[in-house]
Structure formats: structure tokens, C-alpha cells
Length: 107
Image (cartoon, rainbow, N blue to C red; front, side, top):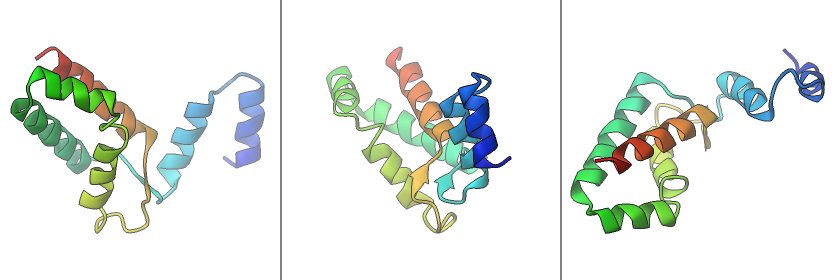
């Protein structure tokens, strides 16, 4: 699908902007996608941080947007060799991180 066709679908209300971004993220090598190895890294990292943090520290990390900025940067660094052209995190990865952080709020 080309970009103009997708924009026309968006204008017609058939798809959303986030769906367009996901479509391009799947094709674009500038994104790190949610592969099993990325997912495992996220799971392990969040679990380790949660286990070593008290509730106050955990809330602080959320309030300073650690997960949306620093943690995503850590993912880029960790997978830099595997994805040398990547300079962004796919929306799918960002959503997965947010969901895992929310899940760990209950612990």
C-alpha cells in the first residue's frame, strides 16, 4: 500500500493514524519491532526493576516518564547491533512496555 492510499483511507475514517504508523513500522527498518527476543528483554528488565524498587521508586519512574524515554532508549542500545538501521521503537513495542508496566503496578 502506498502512503497516499493510506491517507485517503484515513480521511474516509476507515483507518486511524496509529494503524498507519503500525503499517509503516512493519515495513520500515528504522523501527525495532516486537520480536520474541525484544519481548523477553522487556519482560526480564521490567521484572528486575520492579523487584529491586519499592513502591515509591516505581511511582517515580512512571512520573518521570522513564518507560517512555530512557527505557525505550535502552532497548535501542540493547538491540543496536541486531537492528543497525533502527532509531525508533515501533508503536507495538511502546504499547507492550506500557502494558507490562501497568501489569506490574498490581504487584
